[in-house]
Figure 1 (cartoon, rainbow, N blue to C red):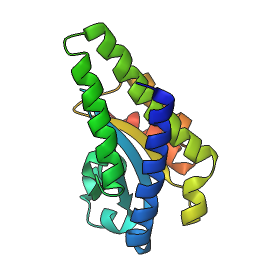
Figure 2 (cartoon, one colour):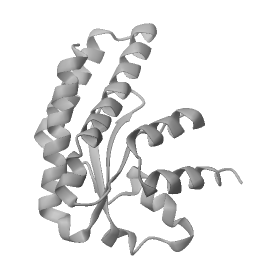
Figure 3 (cartoon, one colour):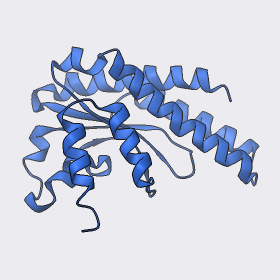
Length: 177
């Protein structure tokens, strides 16, 4: 699989998804955007959340609902056709290499890195802030999978240079306590 082409496809889909979400839900004050995959590296999907949706979050778990894409309202919304095409390509590639664990680990790592690189590129181009006029929290995550703490800190720091980064890293320090 040509990961440079895949990154271009993910970037195009991410932009389209965010623009669709902003057109449909911009009045709800979008503050976050994520790309996420699964442990089997079969999917790439977008997620978006808004401050309006956070108003209904449980106060005790407010930061969890603010920063955990699996809890966001607009999960797998936006650019559905483009993301479905990407997922089909991933599954086709995985089927070609069934039972090859060493190949899979490299593939999974390249996929995750590609998603992070796309989000970082869009951040550096001010794609999100040009649309919303605000800072946007960005994250890449994997369902049913936990990154090592240092890896997650690196992702958050790489994708955010705003107040969200500081709040997220402070919240991380409370985990397990």
